[in-house]
Amino acid sequence: RACARSREADGAAGANNEHAGEALAARLRAVAAATPDRVAVVTPGGEEVTFGSLLAHAERVAGSLRAAATASRRIPPAGGMSGSDDPDANAGGVETSATSENSADVLRGARVAVSAVPGAEFVAAVHAAWLCGAIAVPIARGHSKDETAYVLRDADVAVFALVAERADENAAPSEATATAPGVPPLMEETLEHEAALEAMETAGIHATMVLVPPAPTVSEEVPRDRSTYVANKREGAFGSDVAPESREAEKPGDASSSADGALIIYTSGTTGSPKGVLHTHGSLYAQCLSLCEAWAWHPSDRILHCLPLHHIHGVVNAWLCAHFAGACVEFAPVSRNGFAPRTTWSRLRDGADGGKKPPITVFMGVPTMYVMLLRALARAHEARPREAAASAAAARRLRLA
Image (cartoon, rainbow, N blue to C red):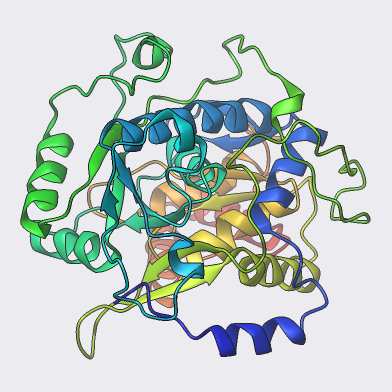
């Protein structure tokens, strides 16, 4: 089961890591506290979301997650993945009549599934899970009902944070959160909602669902309370404007230690059933720190994110490293056919030589994506030579690819 891990191996790794005491979630909240007005995410539709708005939205989603878990009266096993050595001990949690008394920690150690839909809502939902002390489990887009049910059951998910593929353009951004205090947002019947409910039923798990509302963009005025962000205690972090701040305002359930579980990524399952791999806050922090140093990430960087968000490459290398450094993540427009090489070349050209959009400085992909880009470039050389030349010039300007 996904909740089994070796505490001895984890301790050995931490003993050799000078940053073993650091937690990734605290680092990311420190970035938001220090640079709340910097753009953190550009959505597939081109809307900008700042670090401050993103973390404020995560706070609201975290409240909905806690309220949903409390309402269902489901308390996860004490310590969750960081607790008992026996993975089956008290598996699935227990029913309890306790409600508000322990509501702040109702999800500590529990698993929260998050739809891996590119955009600010996914980022906010993962942050929200961490604010609750929970472990995020990205659910792949396009998986079948049985594949999704397998992950939900194996991870023993307590709450499913559903991110819709497309927001309702006619609804006000704040409408989904305009409910009574402590009451999760009302769910609207959608195809994604129905598919998620069917997968949960197939999995046979006792879980509840929360709809993640659209994140506020820079065009909307959002009240921001800097005291809600938990600052990192480490000085000298990437981006000289990220400074340590007081933790006095930290709320119950916000703090995660480096040994606490943060993320479960499932393998592809090419040689058997997919296996859930647990990453702790400390291991993610160490990965981001080493990659940011090796690749010289800078707050001025902007990555064009085209990778899936249910694999480690898209989550850690392309998203978390960027936000660890205070850089911007621009999610590529979503295509039903997968990666779109011509759209990618067009975006790279738009940011070159004082183009219409800010320049892309970082791009990452798997080998298949690079092959598709080269094939598209070769076809453009024959049919649109000037466009091909501009694409090649834009590629050369990338700082890291």
